[in-house]
Length: 559
Image 1: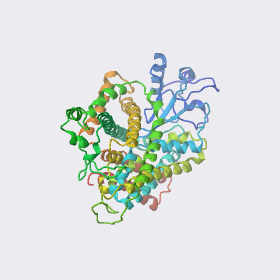
Image 2: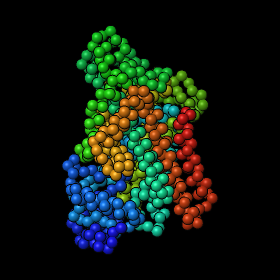
Image 3: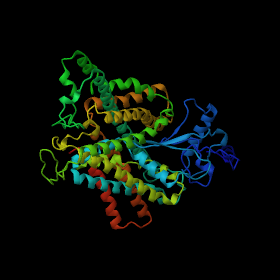
Image 4: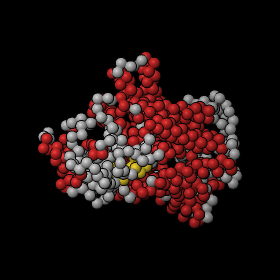
């Protein structure tokens, strides 16, 4: 333990600094130095450094000693604070959602955030938007049109309430200073090491699930992009061999009567052509293209820092806005095609109520998932009293975005001649590879995912290797083995189970069980019980939320 003299060495004598340079994203403490730890627990907040290390060996050793001492004290103990001379220059920090969106949080010289409510709302919206948006129309199809719209609104309200409980969770701890805490710290306080490691496991599940979805989608987009270029060069019209709507705004049914994809569905008509045969052999959706990505992405995962890729995060917002434009334009061109049959399906329409609706709830659990980083995002809000209001507005905008995309795609899908059951898990697959607007969307999404994928890999590495080895880059061997496992999982799924809707709903229901449903409700009930304010209605309501989370996960295996 450090004695009094040690503390004098570990605390700066300078009370006021010009450039304090916070190393974690804490902005609501009145003491600037108390929010500047030199070491950051590897949670979902990543400090992005340059490839060249700025920390000397001496400073690194001091960092490890401070970290060791900090484990011997409570999280609120401010006795061990990094000295000013070992704090690196201010760096830019990023907060990530499980599906890869990232928002840059800049360093500040004051103790409070400087983002207005508008910026905060946009941050939450941008972080929550991810690849789940591509599966929302499929989820509505699985649940039924009316049921799907109701479920989106109800899941939005339920996840909003649970997120609100996460935001208020630190306020339930009165005996300690929790201003610098994140949600895993709250879980560790209430549930000990089990809470810490279980929250880490759930976070890793969401990250690995997102990386697998990314690999499947990148393989899909790369395949369709290559096919578009090949058909354009060889003047091939591949739409004649696909079941589709016979008009200028073609919508296709790539896998009628089945839930999967044919590998090179639209090229069969030209099988006698030697060039096409060679193209089909070497450019196959599930047999070759997923392996081509290894040579490009595996080396990028081994970088010590993802700072270069973080510069392209704006592409995520651009991609979502372009998808909204694409869906709006296509729906105007196609018009609406709706018939309402409550329980009995017809040749072209699905019933309004279907018992496959848990597939949509699983997708939405991940689509509305921001609970692991919401505290950090709201810490940067200039007006802390508006946090709850801004959170509600952000969730409303996300819900409206999902409703807009899902309803327009489902309603405008041309039935007849196609059945609504033809809506794919990735709705872009319902447009042929030769469609120019869809080609642009795939290019946008492909490039965005290729830049975000290394960020997700770095984040997973920080969480797992940082906790297990105490170092996010223990050696090139450790990192390479870890990355090979992650990439291998993506390749296997892209080859044998390229269903992004299934992957999203399983990973969403699994990670959401703890972060969304169980922990927020349990922490709130425990805090009320300790204060002797727990009533039967509150107890029953929050137990019901936990039961819903369990049912959501279990139902994924039976529908």
